[in-house]
Image 1: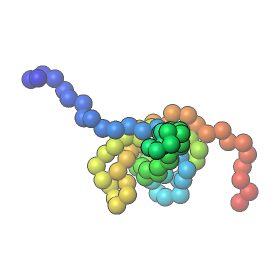
Image 2: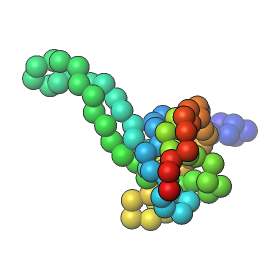
Image 3: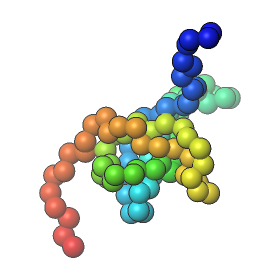
Image 4: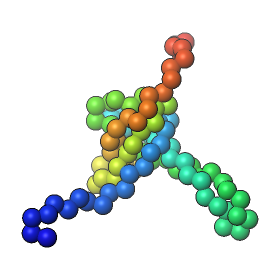
Length: 95
């Protein structure tokens, strides 16, 4: 144990960016499939996470990996680790 480095056990999740309207903050929806407790049918459960995006590299629709971190604000407890896959941009939105 004397010379070993211990990696902290921090959760990681992969989800889709649904909002980038805040400064340095993104909203990520993580979807998981679970069996219903009573009926055993597989259902989709979605949860939103607020994540810190220091450099503003995530865009709407991107698939991203987020990692648990210390609280930065009332809701923000996750940090953007990497953009796994970029969203396909079909056309420019009319402003």
